[in-house]
Image (cartoon, rainbow, N blue to C red):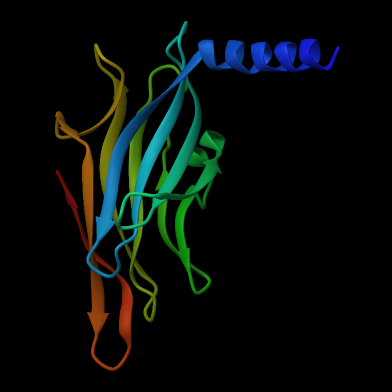
Length: 167
């Protein structure tokens, strides 16, 4: 009886995975530490609509440390999807004013430039499907990697993100 129950549970789990797939949108690193994270989307195989967003965090040697589930509905809120928070500051958020689960939309990467002054900067990308799957685009070029250069101030240290390099 126990084997039958385990078999049924395993079948249910596998059937859920058969209806969706995960796609890595981008890999992000920075010049402050060795942490790397991947932005991953879960896509419905039948409709190709975006279901969930994850932030997978990895150590320098490639071992996954954690997975954070992000709510795509938060993209259209004032605070957006909070990707990185440090010392009580929202350092990096994703926001959109036209996000759609089926078509994507314009995504603003909202960064804290200077936590001391509160200055923020934004970088716009498009989230859209191509023939293969979901992608991020900057001026019609696919972006798969982001490198964060931190903003350091003498006597204060790291105060924010100086620039975001898209490759």
